Length: 500
Ligand code: C2E
Ligand code: CA
Ligand code: CA
Image (tube, rainbow, N blue to C red):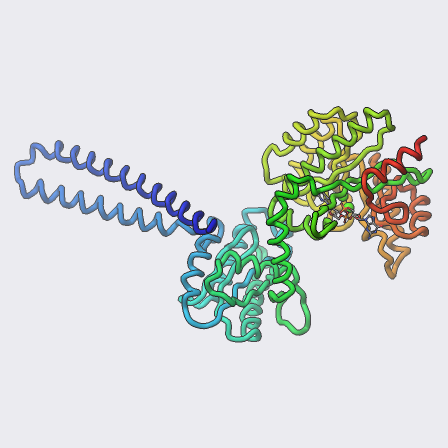
């Protein structure tokens, strides 16, 4: 129903814009003909008069027809590729799906397209996207199938389904052509698509729901010898997950209003004396029926649907309130960190909302730390620098979370003035080459020291790692070896008892 109303609304806008254009053109046309009539006042021959007027009117009508055809042609075009945008793709697909036979919806993502944008710049990145679209579109059967750009470096395809094997061959053919795309100097870009495949069951379902399913299948892409391309196929497990996601989405807003999201605190232990020197606020969803739901089950979903922005702000407020309470009660200040998700960055001026919350509480300086995940530092650098300055101006601290989990460089550390570095737990997974990973940890810690950053090691579970980190002069440990995330009241007992 919501979908249907949205479609009607956008149709009304479309017709309204069209009506505006028509009214304007008619007024301009009539005015022009009147002026022409006056200009022809002195022409004596009626035949010449009528001839000129007919010619002019015919020309006006012709140009209007061309204009409207172009107007309609451009609607639904994607600026970058010149092909169909998501809306147009969905429109065409719903028409094609009325045909006989079986179909699949394929969601394709370019493997590490960011590297191309980084290496060649956005403009050339756009040119490459256009070429990729061309290759994909040429693989489509012109009357029966369709392709379009869904967003960023993601493409959608509606294809006839004969067998999985035939489909794989066609997808492999696309990848083969993509792999031979070259830059100006004849160097191959090395482009490859990953595919999520949804075999259409109910042709009346909305195409955007089909795309969602294909996209979900894409998340589980594997490259087994069984397949010719990297692909994932939507199956029962995905169906369950999608059902679960819908269920959580239905109740998330009410849950936030009802205070079902609760901050847990996981202590950070100072290594020098093994006492609590900080904590991270980690959310738990206390559902009245299901009991506790852990973040891994809902944070990725909230990141996808944007709800994370509200949840982060809520958690931030909870932490402000807590710190204010501790301060009033005369407890020692234990800095608490909160996670700030990537979702905020698409909202210009989002930090204002943080400032408004902060201004409502009496929070001492340096008692709240904002954790920014490492992956933000790949492409939001200039925005981040500005944000970090604002965080500091507001009297808060700032750290890089999950450091080492992606492919950020050590150089990046020199560019941003954060206060702390949280080494991701990948550093502490038992590896075959422990000596090597120790030396990596050592150099990261020493570089951080040179830059006057505190270091926090996350996910430490065994004593030998604690000893080693002590030796390497890491500042804090946040890991199960010392404590798991716990309710605030439990934290208060151990943190403030310790101080007395
Ligand atoms: P994170 O920010 O990296 O948080 C640390 C996670 O590692 C926590 O999981 C914590 O319980 C877990 N952990 C700590 N020590 C150990 C250890 O020794 N071994 C193991 N195996 N795990 C350890 P948790 O609480 O389940 O949170 C998972 C993720 O969910 C967090 O990872 C964070 O990315 C996200 N998250 C949690 N709360 C929030 C929030 O309020 N906002 C946002 N944006 N994300 C949150
Ligand atoms: Ca964190
Ligand atoms: Ca982390």
